[in-house]
Length: 99
Image 1 (cartoon, rainbow, N blue to C red):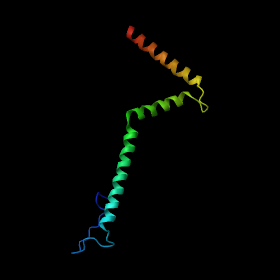
Image 2: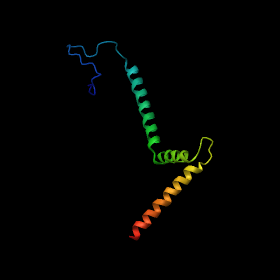
Image 3: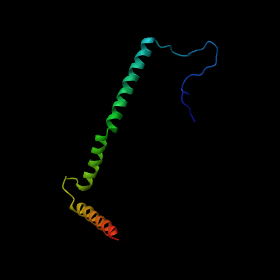
Image 4: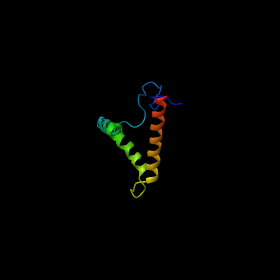
């Protein structure tokens, strides 16, 4: 199992701080800039995704899809089933309160 930071080179040789190709300060600055832009973009996408209005719209969209067929026509059988279930539930609740 890997741990955070294990991707770094942990050479124990004295004087061998970073083996391999050396990067210039400009290259490192460009990589940091690209990483910052990527993080900013990801955070903006997450903010948009979890915004309450967007979550509600997604939920309503899936509920609407339940009642509509592929042509956008109302599915009467499903509407009748839900209305009947609602009426039955209201009937049961009102009856239980009378007792």
